[in-house]
Length: 372
Image: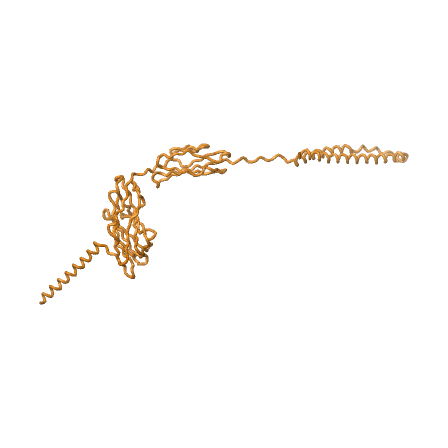
């Protein structure tokens, strides 16, 4: 009887163990969604065509059906290892957070052949990822191998994923369905040539002489030139040119920039030309004003009149004194002399007045002549 009970106990334990293993197998084989919540995973590439030798990024997005927070996740991303190489740091794949991931949320990566395992965790449960709409979570960087077949495709897949979300106090696992593979075409290597083949100004002469490896020049132009153009050409036919400046020159230094963008837009070169427009000549001093000329001539006229007056009023030599007894005897003559002196003084005054009046009139005449 005891042996029978032991056998029944062993059988029961075996049945329970099998049921647990079967349940685990079912959960692994078939994604189970948390009640009422679901999410989709997608991959977006930074380039529509993956050119040989070029680097690009793959961003993984999670889009929930309703907003919720992620406390941790595990994802396995597959890539075409024969055509692509993943960027690494210290021997492990490089992973970058997006702006939607808090700084306290930790990301780690590992690699197994053509798969990259990415795990994320909020160790303090204080910095979860808030999912709202299509939310970017992490970014991986790849480079196209030079021996990848042009025209073929490179594929990216999500091989497995598990997201732990917060619902109440306990994390609830969520298993998003795997998306379809993401594919992109392999394109040819892009030209990176950014040199000019010629640079000819419409005015002046380049200093120094043009050379495609020299990127700084100067040109001197005269003051009457207010614009300048350049005949420029890129060395590579698929490069693009952009010329800025030169249409309206100021006096002094002006900057003209020529930007060469290669077929590969990540490569650019700038040529800078300083155009020095001469300043207009400084105005010469103007001729003396009419007032100054008049004053000079008036001065000359006044000097002439003064000379004439001085000639008129030059005193005659003083007569030699005669003996007192002789002067007394000449009383009538003395009276006549006084009268003549008075007449002479009146004549001299009249002459001086006429001379001064003449100078004034002459000055007026000069002024009228000069102003006209």
